Structures are given as structure tokens and as C-alpha cells.
Image (cartoon, rainbow, N blue to C red; front, side, top):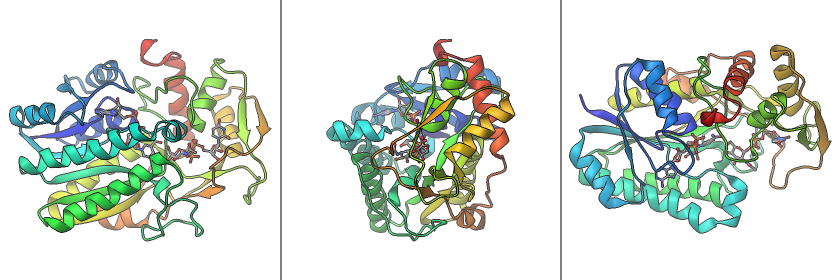
Length: 338
Ligand code: NAD
Ligand code: UD1
């Protein structure tokens, strides 16, 4: 049976998606250069699924290596997660971001086309909506970017649309993730940030486990109910399931679709802190500090298109998100090295 190639396969979202794909009866092949992940993640996926996960160590910018992968494996579709994702770093190293994300994806698509593999699910981000004026955010909202990371996602959305327009055999699902959090309920895999976490949930988890003294809440003067930033947090297992549904959709439908993957529900930073500490019965000390430059006040999805096209909606609630994030953190205080 041909496999689904998962680029960035050892990463946070891909490792959870691998489980959902296997459970849905797909074969998977993971490819990663391990620039932001460890092979242990795939070993843990194998442990959860009770079978080994074939993987290739390669870089998506390495055309010869990709050629070899497509020559030696039967691949029916690609779910393309590989990329760099740290906003702050992208402003310091724009060329690395454009090379990895944009050039890497162009190389990948070129090799796919040569091998007649024209089904692609692409990891985009709500960041392509910039500072959206209207909530909830619909897929046809204006797009913009304020940093090289966001710009790379926006460029890729345009590149993929041009590619599909040039050759209608391409079937492409651009998935715009809102804020993925949480972990597999086993606590065996989860988000494993290098160094100081940029994102809220891993920071809260590290404060709760005692690795960091307190959370800095970036601003309490936004136009939100409690003044702190509001986001659409989505459980990573729901997000993973969205990829399965997107692939099943592409098996039926040609063309390109761009679809939000969010819950449609926004929570503030303080609501997240409260939920985490109350549900997990653990203290999360915090202090209010200045806004983080480049942050927006509110961002949540209109999630209706995913339901309409894919028959998908998020099933897990905030309690599941904070419980599963905490289980992963407690069982693996030092990530996969624990
Ligand atoms: P991650 O860093 O855990 O996973 C990305 C994986 O890609 C890593 O395993 C990394 O080693 C690999 N990789 C990077 N460059 C590569 C290259 N050139 N060749 C091969 N492998 C490479 O990140 P994630 O959170 O799982 O994100 C997956 C995708 O989803 C990314 O494209 C990211 O931009 C996008 N996304 C993530 C979020 C989020 O909050 N996590 C939100 C929106 C979009
Ligand atoms: C970040 C990225 C965005 C990416 C998204 C999903 C930035 C500027 N933006 O956005 O491009 O698409 O993640 O991966 O990095 N917060 C705190 N203290 C912290 C961390 C965060 O108060 O230590 C607040 C933020 O101000 C925000 C909320 O928590 O209001 C969520 O932050 P974060 O997890 O970084 O996600 P985004 O800001 O949505």
C-alpha cells in the first residue's frame, strides 16, 4: 500500500498526526532532518501504535535525497509539516527561513511533480491573517504578514495556488492552524521546545513543573474582557485528525482549498492560566509585563468551512488541553531526553 509522506515527521504536530493516520488505516513514511526534533519522538509513536514507523533522515532542500525517497518508496500523498517556525528567530535569520520554508517547499513540489505525486496537505498558519479586523476570522479575510516566518507561509500559499492553477491535477489542502496545544493522552509524545518557550502553553507547563519561576503575561491592556490576549487554542489531537480528514477530502476532490483548523472559541491568557492551575491542581505564578512587540489582541477562527468540506470539528475542550499538556510535561520534564 502506498504511504503518506510526512515531512517534518518527527515534529510536534506531525508525530501526533502519524498516530491518527495509522489509526485511520494509512501507511506513513516520516522524513525529517531533526533540526528541531529527535528520533525518539518516532520511537514513542511506534510504542503508542505498536508498530515501527519507517523514517528517512533528510532535508527537504536536498533534491537528490528527495529523489531517492520517491524512487525507493511508493508515495501517494504528502503532508508537509517541515519548516522553521519561531517568529523572533525569523526576524534575525530571514534567509534561513526563506530557504528552509520557501525554497524547501519548492524543491519538494518539484520532486513530487516529477514522480506524479500531486496530493499535498500543507501546514499554514493563522499568522497569514496578520492583525485581522473581523472576528471570527473567515478564510476569505485579507492576508498579510509582519515577520519573515509569516511571510514565508503567505508566499507559500501563493506559490501553491499558482502551482495548482498551472496543473489542475494537483489537489492541495492549505490548513491554517490556530494555536495548537496539548499532547497525546498517553503522555508519551508532546511539544518539546528548545530553550525558552516562545508559546504560552509550554511556558505555563514549565512554570508549573518548576523549571521557570513565573509566567510573564504580555500585556493586560488589550481590548479583551480581561485585557490579556485572546487566542483559539486547539488540541493537537484534534488538529492531527483534521489532517486525516483533509487527506480523505483530497481523495475525492480536485483543486485547492484553504481551511482554518481552530475551535472557533477564544480564551485569554489569564483564562488559560486559571484553567491550567485549577484543573491540574498546580500553582502557576505570573506577573503582568509589557505587551510583546508584534502581538495582536484577539485571534480566533470561523471554523465552519472545515466542518462543511471535511466533516471535521474540534472535539476536545480546554480541560483536555491543559490536562494532556500537563501529563506530557510531568512525565517528560526534560522532553525526550527525560
Ligand atoms: P516542529 O518544529 O515540531 O516540526 C517541524 C519539523 O520539521 C521538525 O521536526 C524539524 O526538525 C523539521 N524540519 C525543519 N526544517 C526541515 C527541513 N529543511 N528538512 C526536513 N525537516 C525539517 O513544529 P510543529 O509545531 O510541529 O509545526 C509543524 C508545521 O506547522 C510547521 O510548518 C509550522 O510552521 C506549522 N505551524 C505550527 C504552529 C504551531 O504553533 N506549532 C502553528 C501554525 C503553523
Ligand atoms: C505565535 C506566533 C504566531 C504563530 C502562533 C502559533 C509570535 C509573535 N507569534 O502567536 O506567528 O502562528 O504562535 O504557533 O510568536 N503569551 C504570554 N506570555 C508568554 C507567551 C505568550 O502572555 O510567555 C501570550 C501572548 O501575548 C498571546 C498568547 O499568550 O496573547 C498566545 O501566545 P503564543 O502561544 O506565543 O501564540 P500567538 O501569539 O498566537
